Amino acid sequence: MAPPPGSRARGGTASEGETLVDQAPATPPDRASLRAFTADLPKSELHVHHVGSASPRIVAELAARHPDSPVPKDPAALAEYFTFRDFAHFIEIYVSVVDLIRDAEDVRMLTYEVARDMAAQQIRYAELTVTPYGMTKRGIPEEAVMEALEDARCTAARDLGIELAWCFDIPGELGLPAAEATARMACELRPEGLVSFGLGGPEIGVPRGQFKPYFDRAIAEGLHSVPHAGESSDAQSVWDALIELRAERIGHGIRSVDDPRLLQHLAEHEIPLEVCPTSNVATRSTPSLAEHPLPRLVAAGVPVTVNSDDPPMFGTDLTTEYVVAAELLNLDEAGLAGLARNAVQASFLDTPAKSRLTREIDAYLTSWRRTQEPT
Image (cartoon, rainbow, N blue to C red; front, side, top):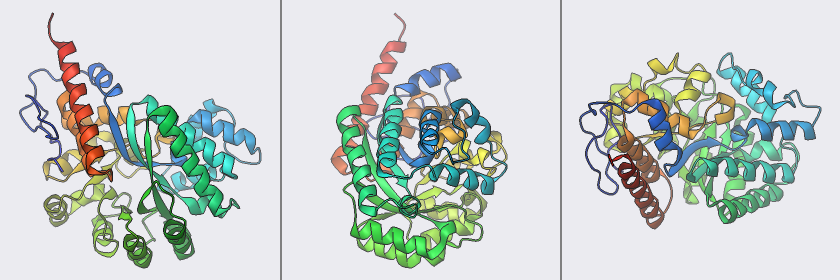
């Protein structure tokens, strides 16, 4: 993986796949310029949840289909509904939205519409975290879930030009029965787009190590390990994910900043963190964006990618998260392109696909620079 973008912004010219870490520009770009650049920047997203990506339009449509749900049917009322007191409250609200997915058509519609919203942001590739247990325990047949996901994935690739991949994750708060069912579906019903195996939900009171047998099974079947850790708990959670679950990337991982030895380990072994700044503030995992540990993680040499997590629930999207990261790290447009390259390199795309997407990012940066030259 290329070196992570640092707290110094990028000047100069990048060769393909290189992330520059030079002196800060004399005049940093303003937020409007950064957003304009990022809006059309080809992007990848590695930490984004399936149900959590449903826009107010999609959630309201699903809620209208299922009037017994407490979820508001009016898209305008969802902003207040998606205001979280703490991480536990976020999980409570998230589960209420999950409960709107009750049949295979709900699954297919949600997935395709999420892909549509992503494609509009110039997201070329996304590893979407799916919790199949949350759908099957509500009565949707397992095979129907897999078919709906794959139908939406293939249709989105054809119609929208976006490639989706799946991470099947264990809802940790539901314990070992959920882990067993998720591992079985991942290994025995494995849909074509499945690339990784994860663990979500609350960390406090849900030790990572208890899920080791299920990760061992998934890894033996060729799936990558990408558990959440170090979001709402502590650095030890990240160590547990690395040692017990053999994590190749860490979902969130922001509390790694509290352990210098862990930071050194992540940097030396090039283990990326999937950082979601706005999400961390919304769930009270960090007090504010100004206090977010992203700059300290980068300064320690830890590979980072920037992601949106559950974007409509947190009033954000991937474009916004890139702009937030640019402000935290003092990046210019070349630095933002470096973030986009980091996501490609940390992804589970094959080598030819990584090369194609990296070339597209480089070509976009070159084209943008030409448009900014004085006439």
